[in-house]
Figure (tube, helix red, strand yellow):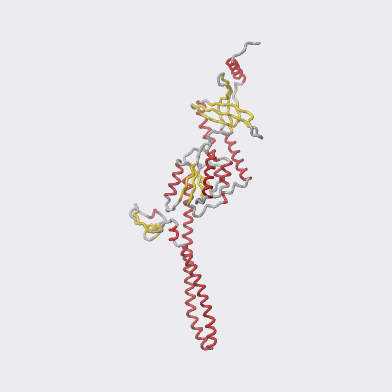
Length: 412
């Protein structure tokens, strides 16, 4: 029996063999099961799964030293728009290394971002295909944002700058519209996005079932990097949004980025402030429609009343002449006609009076005072409604009418 080797001696031999027989670099496809950084170095756990059973069939460790990682990471994130995370498919250029103390590891020399982009695109297309097969891809598009959408549920990070911008835009809108926002905090970047946003949607749904007034949901994310958008490209989150009972507006990305969540939502805008502008514009269009209908109804009712009075005046002149002619011919016929005409005239007058009363009720329902009782206000200058702040100047006196009183102000 040969003299036994020490473990150190054996590992030295393995190291030498690997260095002699595997001195080349290799491009290898793998899935990341874990990624972590330490002291500027990056350590990855690589895995390959069986395509049919999804069970692991190969595992390995890979390391990227600081001097290489500092160059690879920014380029990869800039091209793919994402950070490396578990579940991502990557194409790595590696060479083998065996250390007598730390064992075997693949040393990363380069990473091909185009390969990952292709895999991300394939995953996104697969999610979209599955949503269409389930018949839910267009469900949100079939919903309608309510005319008076003023109760807004917001899913966002409480400390995000985008959330503050969104609220400021609604509060300080040029038309004085009132919006009631309710925040449902959620993680908006990193691996916890999916479950956090789903949890927020569930809380909103519970509140709706409890009778809380919510007209629309807004999912906003401002100030984050495009590399944090991967959490919005998941099947489970897309299914939850697609099946949600009220419209969802998203403002989570930037101009060139569109996630699966954007595609499945009711309306996608670029930024949180754009989401606020959309809600303000919706209410402004409703207000203009109400004003237009008020003017039309007032005009129609006025014309109808005028015609009715003209007809009554005509009848008042015609009936005495008819009576005079009938008296000349036959008093009996006159009495008969008079007895028949009076009930008809009375019934006609009652019908016309009822129609006038109904028209009066419609006018009353459209009385601006009713809108004031709902929380709106009207600002007047020289007795005329202010629709454009540019027409006011410093020192002008304005009058703001609310439901229970009038406020006079001086423009500064």
